[in-house]
Length: 116
Image (cartoon, rainbow, N blue to C red; front, side, top):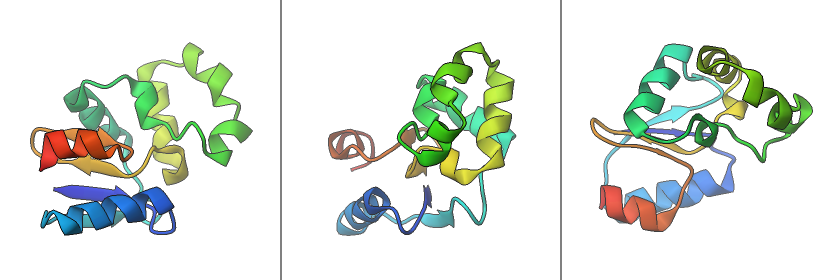
């Protein structure tokens, strides 16, 4: 299992504590130091079954500065993957990637259902 996080993020800290308390082993990856590639993002998006918007950190400063709320709708999926790959802070975190499951953000009930 791959756990992609920004260590200073409070939600990521809660998610990591949840994984640890459930005895779930994972490989940790710092989203700014080793940002996801466009190819990884496309693979995870396709595997997840989630709308692509769920991969964007819509509450982040960079998302707002770039006015992506308005711009994203006119972008192709390929353009969105490329944009997400430019800066880890654009990507919703934490991200969990397993062989069968991709989760964005930390919703305890969803994690309980899919991972525990």
